Image (tube, rainbow, N blue to C red; front, top):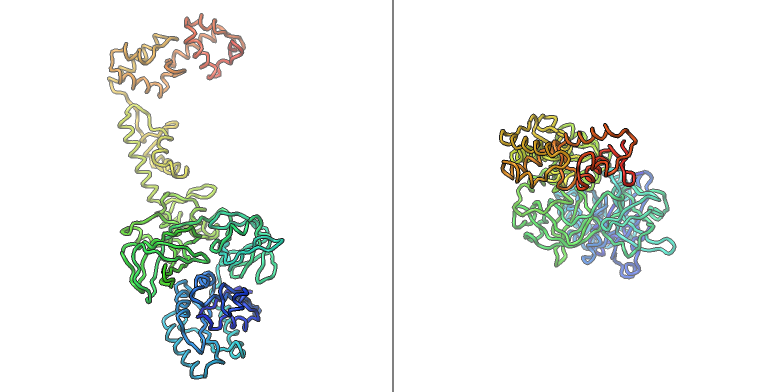
Length: 632
């Protein structure tokens, strides 16, 4: 069975609720106040099983005061029933509802002329002609128009047949998208707890599933699922759904939140959009405040136009919406904007980037990127999303927080793009995605930094990997750092020297002057044996520039010609090897060596003996046992 959601649209008191009652036998006016006043204040719901298709009806308010409630319901519909009363014809709210449907991308519908029992035949024909003129050039231009009377039942059966046929003909929602259930009602039932209702716009929800409410970040377990008042273990896209959540207080829930899969999506307060103004609206100025509607959410926003200072009636432009409150939106979602005051619908459009960086109004690069995002091919959009991301690299999960696709499908598309060299896809628990241009830029910067390091430090082997990572890659995934370095190594542009990185093929050669200083330092330390001079002494004693002596001294330590065993205590490596050799000559393995023995053998004071013995312990040459050492 197909599950389809139909919404009503039309002016107050044009018979929308009566029409649904005539079709389904259910009164969608659920509030006492609605029934007392005879008007729909909030969303009402009913359904009709027709064998191979189940139609869920969302009855929306027609009164101007309740258009925001209408917007909360119309966002999840598959087709619309545009309701026009035969005794009044088209009215302001009829036109506004119709405009909202067009702006939200509704593509199918039926026109129903109600209350035919209150108008003569000629009046009914005039209304039909007026409706045909009004919908010309829209998605309802070729729609069927059905005159009916909910009171007498005239035309209801023909309308049911048309609804059935349209229910089978409309494009079915993708069955494999991730769960999204925008909340339009929240209440508490004694003994059950918090219950949320909405139209399941994508994916499915099951009993005992863990879900998250976004925005808000609340996680909960689904205790129960209802579809059209019947308990079930599972609800799917296109069904009116109620879920009973465990562990969520009613006070923490509000209309506009979305029930979705946990730990996947994030809320945002900036949106890049394609915005279209209604022909009936006044010009929209840059940074004007409006009311933003998407799904069941309403909040205030400023419209930052890109590339122009104002947007004329009927025109389309790219813009950035800066919201007062966080919302949950994905690429491709439709939205509506209404004037701040008076609250009338003035435009709407499509969300192109749900979490962009801030743009300046003169940012022409942003316009070019948005043009590419404003297409149909997902393979063309993913490289753009990577290229404009402020972090320069994101993982597959972060990308999907913008798109909401099944992970398997998104992985397949990214693999194809990677094979085509349009993106770089790096293995990880959640594969890391980066633009090829970013990789090339990082490689170029890496080479420039290493080259500059060699110029400033001609006798150093290379730049440490850690310093290099912190300079250019600190805010990037480690996979990107490794990929860039491995790529440069494979291209024979760099080489690895332990934990250092050098330009490929580079050899460290001391100048004749520097080599002379090195030889003097070496000779001084070898001559001193087990009691070497400190650096300051070398700088005073050697016939060389003190700064050059210091530079060569530390270079010899890095090259491991000298070994620093304690603060201001550095030995020549040959001296340390000679100390080990002499100890082995005098003591077999397992013998004990005391501090006095060591001092006597090498003619040193405790100042040198203790650091040397601790060094031998670290080298696993000896092991401390009380006050002595055991030869290993």
